[in-house]
Amino acid sequence: MINIILKQWQLTDKRLAAEMLRQLSRGVARDMSAKPEGMQLMIDLVREDSKVSQPFTVAQIVDYSFLAKSPPRPRCAPAVEDGCNAKGQALLDYL
Image (cartoon, rainbow, N blue to C red; front, top):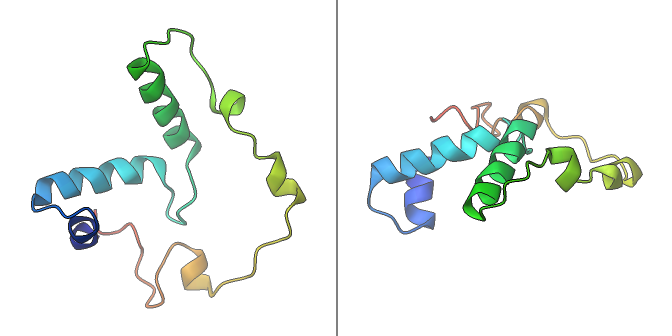
């Protein structure tokens, strides 16, 4: 994963790429869906950066109601569905 980040972001600093991956893993679950605590972290960071004193919760910002109306997603192979690649390797195990 570090090498992918280096290439995609055209970086040469592996420590920076590792930190980027660490930050990503704070907000993304193994199946690559957004973690609620990761969403809250991003909300708090933006709020602080914008100098907004009022706290906001994920529920105040994010509306997942459209998911209830969407058709079920197609089933994947179990390894892929569990956040693994086709070889069964966990996608975020490269931390």
